[in-house]
Length: 115
Image (cartoon, one colour):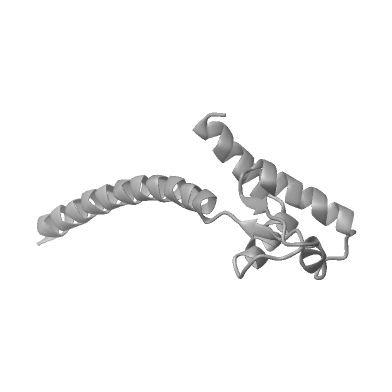
């Protein structure tokens, strides 16, 4: 799978509000499917399917602790998303800084002509 494919899967997984809520909950620590299902008015099976999508996207992992199978957030996966967003945010900010400089220069020249 290419980096672009991984990004596509991750962003597609995060497009769903239930999955974003699950990721937000997991940011506070590991949880079981039952714990993750509590705040939602959907079945545990539906929550399991959402977790599966997050697993396929590489955003979460599951472990086994005796009878429990907690779900864990993968911070490295979120870091890759953050890096991608930051790279593009910085490019846009640089563009706006250049535009601000052009506008400031044009405004200064306009004021000088009026004087």
